[in-house]
Length: 262
Image 1 (spheres, helix red, strand yellow):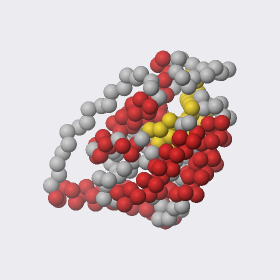
Image 2: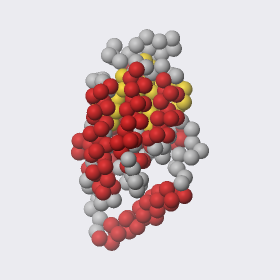
Image 3: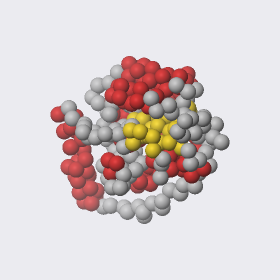
């Protein structure tokens, strides 16, 4: 019996995943699932269900959501599901904005985590990734480092578990990322599921798929790839922010109610 399991009327364990595109599963395409993605949280839920048929799973994450949106839209909805386990990652979309008050944001984060913890759930939090290998997102390292220290404090204050994404060097390999260079690839999501289950001290049977051979590109090929990325990913991303729209506009949570994961 897992240490975070408790009795319940419908499920003996109830896992609710909260957050943005990271938790929704963007980058791990699966047209058979809601919103067309699977992701690490779905994989974690499936693994938990293998040893306990009474696991319920909900995923309230929506791509593009900022931290305060997640607190307002997802925390109370999660508590209503009486979770025994909650995973939460929020704040990456705020850090990427031109201006951000990280201290103020994390005060709201702390309040939300406090509510989840007070509801009796085991809470799992994440630090942000160290994008040192990215010429674009590496500029955010200082902000992310401050965010991480505050998240560590919040985890300690509320007895939450911590998945220390900042320290996962395997993500320095670009094959762990999707073509948009912002979201994890399928291999990246599967690896993250393993990392989360390790923090939960849960025995799993996950194998990260073998990565395709790394293809070295010449200068012309690199320039073409970067131009394609700018055209297909970076420019649309910037355009949405200028226009005040989100990639998650019009989307609903994948699993707003508890389901039996598959």
